[in-house]
Amino acid sequence: MHLESPGMTKPIFVTKPFLPPLEEFTPYLQQIWDNGILTNCGPFHAELERQLADYLGVSHISLFNNGTIALVTALQMLAGEGEVITTPFSFVATAHAVLWNRQTPVFADIEPGSLNLDPDRVEAAITPRTTAILPVHCYGNPARTAAFQDIANRHGLKLIYDAAHAFGVQDASGSVLNHGDLSTLSLHATKVFNTLEGGAIVSHSAQIKDQIDKLKNFGHDGETSVVATGINGKMSEINCAFGLLQLKYVDAAIARRGEITAAYRTGIDAIEGLDYLSPALGGTKPNYSYFPILVRPDYPRTRDDLFHHLKANGVHPRRYFYPLITAFEMYRDLPSASAANLPVARAMADQVLCLPIYPDLDDGAVARVLDLLQAP
Image (cartoon, rainbow, N blue to C red; front, side, top):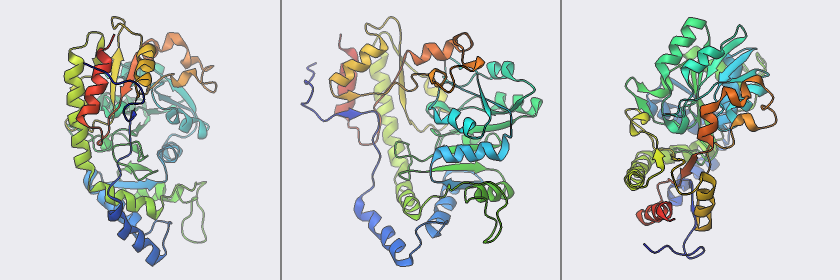
């Protein structure tokens, strides 16, 4: 099939924010202008928390200005001083949140089938200084929650999930956000559901939510009392209004992502040397947040050659997650960052490539990506 030369077609990026119709946003802005409430947990903030808790099937949710501050706060809330065991195969904010709390990240290897943290390797990494486990639902694929809960219970550890990719994902027990002590979300513009910038913590009791809400507002407990060393993690009313509008479209957006995922899987099934993660990994209700492929040794190009080939033809994938977190200066000297400790993560980081997936990606663009994957 003929491939257009670079510059002849619109570039295709790995993701693109979903933007609802602008005219539908205007009434929200008018209400903000009329009541003069721009931030500090106003009426749109309260309404978005209520609607998200209902949509996601969770008891309590606390909105934040971004997912990193949400994760920093969750770790501050529960982990205490000591070691936090986590994955090297994630966005660097996962480990940065540990360092911001002056805790020590300990990296354990991942499973080759799911690219999620391996519970067996986590248990082997536990020491007397371990205080918490921080798995990631990588690409929105549920981690082995039962195994992690068992480990946490037996060793008296806190269990906090970085669920940045897992908005709306369900497993057999319901929302994956209900597992562990806390789960954190990213609501960044690149995510399945976004508030432009934003994040959230899901908790299981009104008491814990109240403590979280104090921490995200400088530690204030009323006008004249400060009870904790909090931070400014509040989400603005404009971000909340955008989220309320986008929530009306999120099911359609996820459905379209599912169609794109199905098309990619069908096309890649016919290409020797390329693999994708098992559809079963998405749980009973996936959100199709990413479409990672693995470029195996029997494919005619290396992963990096394929990356540059796609870019040269106007398609811009991402090597999520390459390099590993443990390759960065602030982590590479940790004993757990050694190559010998992370053989699976290192191998997967050299093979993974995330293809473009977003609701506005049309069938022609998907076909063009698949054509490029088949080209010699």
